[in-house]
Length: 297
Image (cartoon, rainbow, N blue to C red; front, top):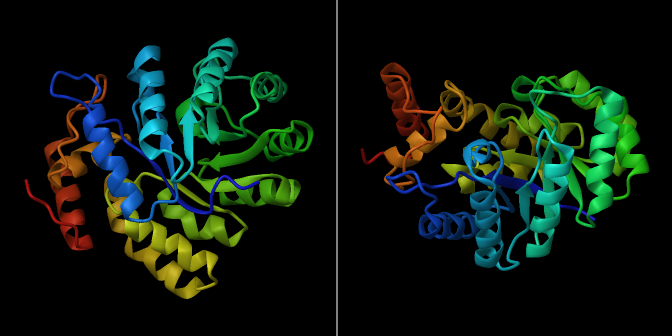
């Protein structure tokens, strides 16, 4: 099986002005993403502010997304937790909606040992039938899936099939590929490393950039998959300034601000995330304009 090849969007969760989830706006964004070639929707991940959604909001948003996309492209739901039992319950519920995959972040705050990670992921995987992408983002969780652990899981747990690699450590990602081979699909979790990771055999990216430049991100990945390495690399390099601005403050602050700058009216962030510092906002505005994106406010 393959989750997808190319650019999956780590989609934001739009909000009304009062901070409630705006499902009507989510529909607009989903339709735009599909129309512009995005290869998969990753809903209620970090970029979707999953940490500040209630469990009811989280699941309702996943269900709504599945219904709107209606099988046109894969939908992968973030259902991870630092509680194994909570991750099991969320994953089972999302599975009942018909998601195509589950994105399971490593346990945060309380962390886990490598043997603890094996037990955590195995327990979740054995509770569902849906294929799982592990999400390794140690800068946020303080917990790192070592290559040997990833290899053990993908070779011994039937439905652990992928990893979103956001360690930033290319050497670690290369070792993961060397140990796992074709048993594990690797997706870049960093927009500035898409082409380097794909050059090691990665399948694509789960992308923040895709929220503001879906066609561009899809085309960059497509060129790489088609063997047009030079053009793909040029596109990666051209996007670096914008990517840097999208991560100059903690994600998803800049990307939601950028979408509002572009007139997409995706609403506010939820605390503790708030608006950008003025200097960073101006940097972001300039990067959007320099990249050729229309800024309306």
